[in-house]
Image (spheres, rainbow, N blue to C red):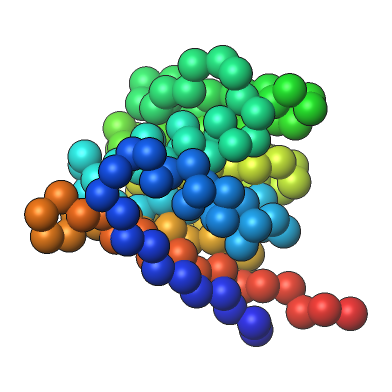
Length: 150
């Protein structure tokens, strides 16, 4: 297993474009990205920046009540954005077909993934965003379960 790890530290929103570009390079072969962090850590803001880099022109917002938002990029790529904060049991995610989304090969950005831990795919990008000292954000990125090369 060849895991990729990276740590980014930033304070300004203006730094997100370059970080998002680097994340897309790191995770280019990983469709499912799990975003971990406390409320207010900046998960949705980071996802908005990544979607901007992917060519999403529509409004990107957390799908807290809908559970999933679908975005279409300028190149006709579909991106799914999940927020499982409000679910009470994993069966809610199963009922909406989360496994089919994960198996689609499209980008799936998941906020509050710990609510559906037993449903995670075997290969994903794990992103953990924390608040550091004096307003600094610390983003730790690890690719988990990379498929073996043939």
